[in-house]
Each structure stands twice: as C-alpha cells, then as structure tokens.
Amino acid sequence: MKWLRYMTVFVPIAFALEFIPGLKNDLALFVVCCLGLIPLAGFLGEATEELAIHTGPKVGGLLNATLGNAAELIISIVALSQGKIELVKASITGSILGNLLLILGLSLLLGGLRHGIQRFDRQAAGVAASMMTLAVIGLIIPTMFEVLRSIELGQFQVFNTEVADPALNSLSLGVAAVLIVLYILSLIFTFRQPQRGVGGHTGVDDKTPDGAAEHHVARWNVPTAIGVLAAATLGIVFLSEFLVGAVEPFAEALGLSEFFIGIIIIPLVGNVAEHIVAVQMAVKNKMDLAMTIAMGSSMQVALLVGPLLVFISLLFGPEMTLFFSVIEVAALTLSVLIATIISVDGESNWLEGAQLLAVYVITALGFFYITFGVPEEAARLLGAG
Image (cartoon, rainbow, N blue to C red):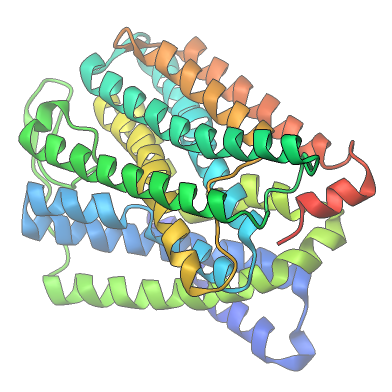
C-alpha cells in the first residue's frame, strides 16, 4: 500500500485551505480532509503494527486491540467536542456495517473468485459472531427503552435520538460499562486461547496457507514507530477538526444529510487502510486473517469505541447515549444475522461475498432515501448535531 503515502500531499493542502483566507472553500476542504485522513490512518496502523512486531504477539495484540480504530475514535471525539452527537452515532453504525458487509463481502467475493471455496476457523468466527450479537443487544435495550418511554409520554419522534432523559443517560452508562468489560474479557480469552481469538491482526506469526509460520521483520525501530504514531495522531486531530467543521456546508452543498455522511463516508475514511489489508489477505487465501480483521474491527467499534464515547461525551456537555434510531438498530441486527449465517459453516465463496455486498448497497440506499422521503422537519432533526 505504498501508493497511500503519496496521498499525504493532501495534508498540507488541507492546512492551506483552512488557514489561507483566499483559498477557503468548505466543499474542497471536506474532500481534501477525507483524502488526507486516509494515509494518516494508514500510518497510524502501520506504526502500531511495527510496535507489535517489537513487543511480541501478546503486547502487539493488545496494541492492535486498543489502537486498531484510533483514527475513527479521534474523529468521533472531535465531533463530540463540537456537539455533533448524531454524526458520531451514525459513524459508529456505519463502521460496523462497513466492516461486516462491505469489507467482509469484498474479501469473500474477491477471495472466492480467485480460490473458489475458502475455509477459515469456524469456532473463532462463531465467537466473534456471538460477541457482535451481544453488542447489538447492548444497543437494542437502550433504544427500545427510550422508544417505549417516549411513546408512553406521547413525545416519540422517529428521527430524533437526542433526548433529555436522565434515566436513558444512566442506562447508557451502565450498558456501556458492561460492553467495555465484555471487550476486556474477549481480550483475556484471546490471549489464553490465541487459536480461538477474536482480536485484531498482531503483525507477528501469521499463518501461510500451508500452515507454516510467516514471521514479519520490523522495518522501523521503536523510536521511529513511536514518532510516526505521534505525528499521525496529531495530524488526524487537526484534519478531524477541519473535517467536522466542513460537514454541514458540504452536506448543504450536495443536498445530503449529516446522518448519511456519517454513516457512509466518514467510516470509510478512517478505515480504508485496514479494509485494503483485509481484502488483500483474502486474495492471498488467508481467510482466517481476513475474517479476524473485518469482524475484529466491528467488535472493537461496538464493544470499545462506542461505549468509550459515551463516557467521553461527559466531558463536553450533552451526553451521548446508546439510543440509536430504529432503522440503525434494525440494520445492525440484520447485518450481524447474515454475517453469522455465512460464517457458521467455516467456508466461504464468492456468492456469499456478493450477498453481503448486496445487503450493504440495499442498506445504503435505505439510509440515502430515508433522508429525502421524510418531511422537512424530520430531515432537519435527522441531520441535527
């Protein structure tokens, strides 16, 4: 993925568009920030992988388990600081859907077209699927609680999930704490049962198709890796600030809602590098690794990133809750269901990949048209942040 490094040229361009008055253009700034965040997220992941090689499989696995979605977490924190709660929720939903449907679908499709029937550890996939099911339950309970409560009070609004309900705030904090504990338990399980683990790619001792160990040699020393990690993080912070500030004018210029941008565009920006690796592994017939990256990233977002943001939101004023729109919860539930059905037998083929991609396209179309097929006031509430 060396070509990603050439995209770093968009980073200084983003700074120029932001700080040079004569060049200020919100539409161009949004696009350039998206393009600039892609290589920065790639550098962040690459630096984490390099550190993982130096620290060994266990510490490396922990680094990937905590920093695997750092770019998306940074973008979300910046959005929270600017009050874009609905945008953050949409990006969480979009990231999970993107990993389970788009990336896993592409991996199965391209890997299947090249190698035919591919096999992977069905037990590891089963553990990941059960964890994702529990994560979705953690979203369903607060959502159904507030929907029923709002209906009872006659205050239910389909597209508005920003409500002032102390009970919902407390429930969300409790559920978020449980999900984080569950994620920590999954890490402990991974370290004790690495052959059945569900954590992220560690960068060390991967298995080749014939079962032999493939040892990765570090290209960077530890100071270099830490320096790149720090620089990439700082760059992501600045570009995230520019990006979030340009979301609203970008949405207005193209006639889109912030909700649609959050659920489709932003998750792709923060995870492109990781997504490419997953697809490459499938094409190389390393389906265990491809499944680990796709499903492990979904787990990390659902069990760690989302719940962490609930607690982080306490620092910025309005609390973020785990109350998602009904269509988001429905899409997540059905996506986890089809991903589980496809992975339960430990085999995959190109048709199953096409099925996952079809579900992603259908879901994306639903999210796109629902913002245009509702009354103007509802659309305004849906895009509020």
